[in-house]
Image (cartoon, one colour):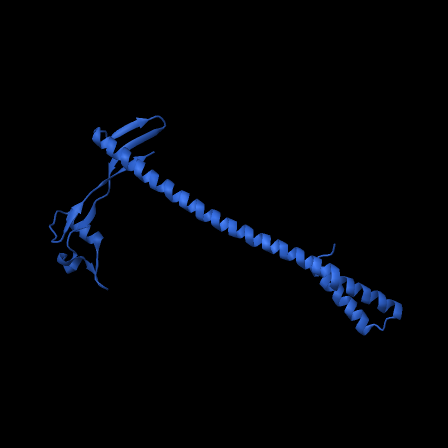
Length: 166
């Protein structure tokens, strides 16, 4: 069967033949019969096939969208479960006073996080630690000052810890 593109070309050629080539009555009748067949049967069948295929593509795309949503929800559940289990393992190791543990193919250790700034009252932080713009703290400079042993009103150095699984 011809493609829709090919049918369009044939239709244009037949119309051009009828309109500009001065066909004989027999040629005109054959050309008009071909036009009728194209317009009444072949093209509608092809267009129906296109429409069915388009509907199928849209339904498939919708199914993919729903599957993406379902998978995203499952991913979030797994991420939260992993976070909870990591926290549980961290707490268990702290409770057993273990800093390192060889567990088969894994090495688990509790390590200190890098120092960070725990801002207690941002209003008390001196201007030297604020970056000029809409007021915003320069936490890196504030942390460096706290690491150097200086006392900064409104801030204190905090250092947490995290669990590393290798």
